[in-house]
Length: 184
Length: 179
Image (cartoon, rainbow over all chains, first blue to last red):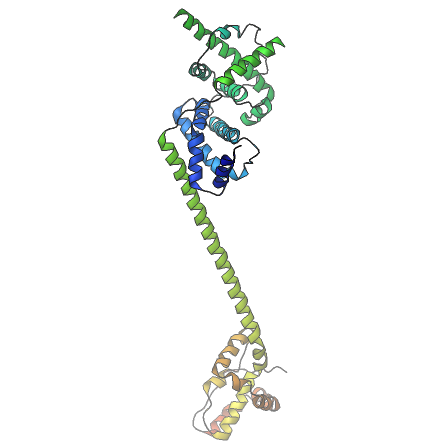
């Protein structure tokens, strides 16, 4: 971490509102993108964003300069999004430990086509809520199955099976998208 | 193994797409965040001030309490001696005898002192004239005269008073003297 960043964080720890605004200006776009990815709705993302930033400044004293500040912020917004998700959860996870195996050729088709980030985001947004949450946590934000299980309050094997199902579902969606693109 | 590699490859592809994602949030969010934080901060400050006031109040109350206690304790010794206050009655009577003037009502009525009220009574007496109460010759006189005329001959007292002069003072009181 750069000395300037450490200095700003130190000022934030002392409650300096100018420093807080500087940190906000620098990382708010990243935070909002993560919030949107987890909520799939702008209004919900704004709630998550606000809640997450208040947590950030309230707990910034506990941040250690030895860690990545961006990683710490990302974790906070993801955790806040999970809390929000669980609060509004309508979809219940099913305890299903059946593994869905991907075939060796599952992803071959995607090597030829480059999906844009927006297209991928749209495809991921189509995942059923439970699948989508596990997929995003595991694939995009690097959570382990154990962490996911704890955060979502599900069984470890459920997390694994949800991820497999999510991958399979996403393949179908992307495959359909690529077929459409080829036709056009 | 091959399947695993494929999964990892796909995961990596997805992850790389979202690595530097950024979406500018609406302007009003920043205002809302910092306003909420300012509110929290104000609440926190008020809480600290309130707690401080409570602590100071409690301390002040405690100090007052100990001061009052100390006051009572320090004032207690004179109270212990003035147990003899009831004995002041005969003194008054004696004064009456010698100078032939009516007794002071206050002196007469200070005869009964329940233990619980001893402190307050003593304070009243001290306010009136602490020096006189503590006068050694008075105490000696009181001690020498003891209690005999007052307690044992309570019925004679009105007669004595009557003899002296015009007014008759009735004292509906019992006098207890500690030995």
